[in-house]
Image (cartoon, rainbow, N blue to C red):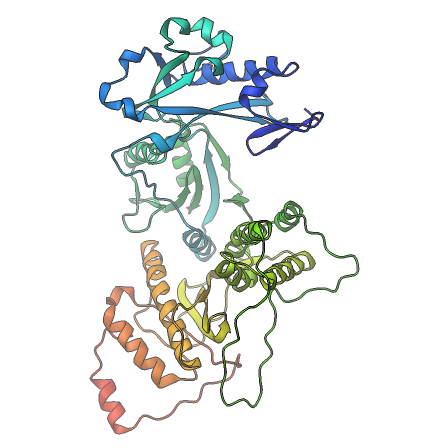
Length: 556
């Protein structure tokens, strides 16, 4: 096992330096015995056993004759692909998995599966620390997509040469083979089926609804109970459970155990790849992703220079031009365009660190947004910015995001940067957090950060700020819906602070007229360059007072 490692769903033999896939492993002079045994076990699990060593075969698949395939389904017969991996820590270190080619399957129904997103997950964590007596646990279902009954069977064509001799003999496949191939009827969910996810969740929903649980019709991935104080998010087969009273969480565990093999973590220490440290005494939770940056930098082949300076900025600083009466957009980037290797590197950097940025480290979001906007045709300047980001990540401590107990009232800080992106574009930035219903809500860990390039060219800094304000208000509408669904009522009023107060009020009133009263949001914006400075207020004239009195009640 020391001479093997996993790479791209194949096995690398260090002695020869060759990547060995399933068919090569079955015929390898020294490894074929192990991999034929592993493959036979996979067939035994999916079919009706093999050699009497599979304790509970799943009866997912059945070998059939060619004439048993319905005539109207011949064009939809798909193929099978075998994936081989080495797991030294498992009881069966040589693992073979049969997956189906989902691209040839024409499922008539909807295959989309509702699931929790990062926003709902973070709001749920805030709800745990803000609800007296609430705690958090996680549940994982093993083989969630397998063994789901299907009303509409699927059909697969396998080459006889891909099937171990032990399976051929036990199932007498030579009798059913046609032109060196054998046909399989799939009667239960398995890997590769596009409908496997939705079928598994529909079955789960049917089983849970019998005990009073239901999925929110508005917020995908949020599950509640008719009367028990328990709520949970569902990401594929991972449950993040908020409960008040251990007996209610145990009720859910017992229901799942009746039909699934599950793993419980009553400490709730990890969920969707993020480590959670709970402090129920202080009513706080700390989110972090240890070793994520180190492993990512190793995969990208980046090493911090031995005598390099510490990098404290993830992106280049654009110095302001003091005294200038007008601000002009930067000229086009004339540096050389990167080759395919450079293009792939930029894409890898963006893809590797985007989850980290959305999960715990929002400081790198503007840089990733800028890099992603240029990754279609990156230049040497783009590469320099990518290296500055990697230098920043390598020289900084790991980010920790902390949520503290609050009144679960949504607040938003909005701002914009004018002409600071290529092609005369401006950038909108937003900080969404849960706090208290006061004029200046105390800060909390962000449930959502937005670093977005405004699509249209803004004619002034004020217009860029108004555009950013609209973007934040639009996002806040959906967050308010989630909070209401979780039982956290939001205040009716909305307040705002900014350097262009009259224009902000006018814009907010127009936004408020376009959305319903239930979708209103609390938007708080600090003036540029000030943290605790009190915003001066002008007394409105008589005409403004009369206009404000005539303003409709549902305006923001």
